[in-house]
Length: 280
Image (tube, rainbow, N blue to C red; front, side, top):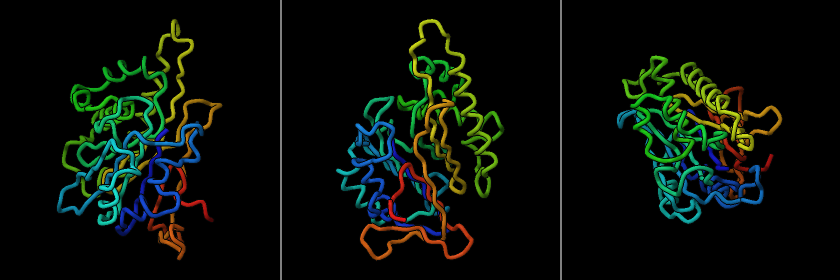
């Protein structure tokens, strides 16, 4: 299971304050994740990625940096994170469930102004993949560059957006697509995944694991929508935490970051597979 992080703030923040410096940063989670469903595999060493939005004058597309090097061993990640700021950031460390070790399989993925990442798996993938691929339009079928179920889920999401009248490649509305549009498309994407799995023939697939873990995150530069979802009625979903407040800063002890709330506002929202600090 992968680990990911989302930051959305009123003000820009240095990437290192999320990715490198906290005591349980995403970098640390690449070799010491504590809340994954299989504790025997504490490493997320199959590549990583960082995505963030820049000044509007540079265009609506997010900047994406990915690598197949383990995050803990990439000096360029430290160089980038210590000198880059943004108000909307995705970070992801990968543990392979589907797809080979390749930069094209590293999250986040992007199309136009949209950025996407996933922690989990699509159930019954070896059977469902062909049906999912054939269910999207040729445009999104041809857009897939890697071999992960996560990127195919993104293609499905893009197909839903287009069918709902919102072209991901078109002119982005001022303020982005908005939470109503993104939320509706996300729910429909999950519904379509569930329908594809429900349609798997019973004969010959009795032992197929059809449970889906769909912790998705999508952003358009202004709005973020995240899900924590498991298709099983009895199994637990993959971990996902959120925190909101007015400031995110070190409390004086190295690596000990805390979310502060000085009023009723929520200028910052953090969503992460694991807390960046276990201090309360």
